[in-house]
Length: 570
Image 1: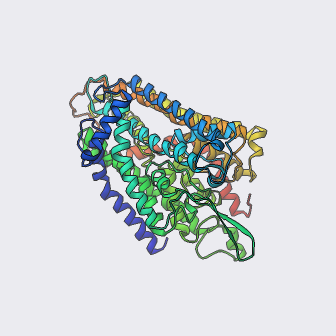
Image 2: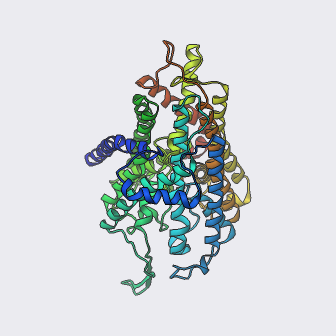
């Protein structure tokens, strides 16, 4: 890493620290149905009208079962809505290129992908989807799937903060308030900034030009800035263009690149302050934040180091580039910005990419893969990162209680067998989906047929695909031909499992905690707001990740790393 890399990294972390509290305080206002924000004069009438139109009483709270059912029903309708748009694309407006409807398996995969906040793309956006499909079918989900993630986190935090309660809030009012008061305003401002950087925003037909060689080239157009804003702030990640954030129309300048990386972490970081404020223990919120940032820094340093060292085979041949491993990277961004972007986007379940992860060195590629397999709790997706990390918090408190021989307590609530079982169920669902689908693909003709690389790297491509799908990330090693009936279907199922089968036990955990009576701390209560707790939490996250996935990682990127040192490539 060069001096300017260190300075940029320090500036990124410093700015993230500064904005965490203001965003957290604003989230407290937004997620309180009676909260007042500076946007009330403009948006309060719209909010009231929305409640009236959909027949919702925002003051009527729901149990965890009611809240969960509303979320599942809303998401199912969203899948059907988007599936219909994608299948009927050729008959719908705003399709200047006359693109046809998608196949049934690709439409299913895409509808599920955007509903689950995954945004995995088995297609090239500019050559497959019309403006209508991009704007109405997909961008709609970019907003509401991000809002749902924030809502689930808020419901779990309410469950922790409340005492002897039966309800966790109202799903519909949370959805409306998060969308109106948080996502729409901030995305409007961010989109205008991106346009100022040169990002396009139009409805023009694609432009045909003649190259210097006399060949014809088609330059894609479209409403890009408005969708990039929410794909980053909502940690969605789906690119308008196939090249995603490596495309000059989707990421035109170094400043837009920095702003996009920063926006991925912004809301997730603020949610940790929201946690501390709601449970009336701000030190706990900062302890959780510190654990996330420590893991993030470690990932960035490892990834950037191995990408800067590059491929030893090139060094042996005397052709090593001074800048390290530049294969699959934009010269505009270089090694460090590509490594930083890759770590951020996989730590935060965003999935947007400004470089090709398939071209990373084995250990450089292991970092984004492992970030996903940790459960994407290193800041994580908006909402999803916090409720995922709180599962590890429950386990950390439980283990701490075992070590001192006392009944575990978390913020005045006894952690008993039910809470531990629900936490473990959440983690086991993630592990079973990733490893189960990868194993199935490895021994199936349809799985092997999709590989463009052999050996350990081919295995890593499959492992990354199902890790990304289950983790609702959406990025890929991109050496995998995934637009087939089997891959589209199994990846779609993995996305559904990773989103909804994990949310259900988390909501049950929220309901269980809400019903418990808060007891005052005693001399034996394990504090959850200091360095000791942060270190324990980091250890639990790494230990669970290592135990679950180290054997698979050893078969893929770790073995490939040692083989590369012997001159073997795939």
